[in-house]
Image: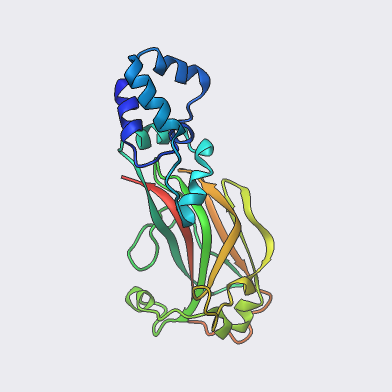
Length: 240
């Protein structure tokens, strides 16, 4: 417990109570093991005004209570930290239903950075926004060609832009079915990134939860058989 207190006091996070899930009973136990000077220091640290976080990190901090206890412990002792991250996957548009993360997938640089459509142990991730881009491979049967696709905005692919998408984690809806793909049409916008959709309601994905991002098209008309989609779930996650 003494090491835990020291780590909390030295932590890069000033919102110690939220991070560690400290309740009154635990705080009482901690206080009982401190001398008067240490008690004053701990109280001042917990009550001090936290440094202002920005972007997806600030959003992640609002969800600390949802972080599994094992991950909180690793964060508290410095084995894990928060970092900006993007989970991505590339899939060919060869049917009206495109599953961007699948259980048979393996990590491979240039194709995806998640295996089996699940996050690894102790990786907790808050989805703050999503990228969706499309491009055409010179040779769709060649992985090297797919990895070299110059992805661009989906406004150049009308059948895709007119489709719908959804996102689930552990069978729970993060974005409901029927959400329009046109949310990703940002071509020519100066106030947002290409193909980026910022979520008004960020949601957390925990380790070992099945990730399902599905794009549904109404037609395949006009789609080049060599067309691929790139999806990037953007946000903040735990990392060593």
